[in-house]
Length: 340
Image (cartoon, rainbow, N blue to C red; front, side):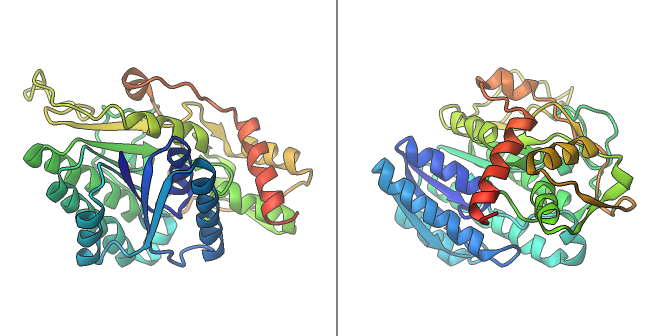
């Protein structure tokens, strides 16, 4: 089976590619290697994937391409004819979307449409794409369930991710593309993103700089370890969604559809207080953090908390890494990568 992964030099795309290479799949990886964060980290991930390719005796093809280049994307699909698509390329970040809105429209809307159009033309077996817990927006009911309405986003990033879900449902309905949207909850771990709290806090603690603690620390996050996410994603390959002829359109349920379309939360289902998270980081690093308390930032939410019953009923979930173990693994990687 041939699998195409967009955003393969990104955090989740990299880990997914490494896992699937080890499982013996042929992989086509796409990435534009943009400068949103450290390009050297992305290039290091690609080097790791080349090592994994050699070790697994599998086949990895990397193509540097921007997803807004429709003709180039269409040509890659025509030449490679992938069976399964994992779409993880996106302009990430909630706060950055306030400063640079058009980059989100280009990457997360135009880029998404180019990929799903290729899926339509090539009749792929499954299209699995990254959404976000951010789509729950102003919801105050927790835990967040796929049954909940998601009509009140509070950031442009969240709005673009919700638009992806809607586009995918339409394409499943019109063209029969088996599609799965994954709402991810604060994924962390080795090779993580430098723009996310675990990385930012760790860097600041090591350098003696103050860490910025928003909403004066009164926040909770459903930190989800990367290996747990990847284990679930890999299992979805063997189970593309099918049409639901028993769906009752007179009683709409946001978590279901008559079409071959699914939405799943992937989270740890165990929100951690931000100050507790910082305490675990301090203990693992062995250095006390300098703290700067700030008000809530535009686009942020106070709590994220995933209801994961739907995906647990769909596939077998075997991994549930503790925060202590996950942070230990992350800090060990950080020390080795940055020679700390």
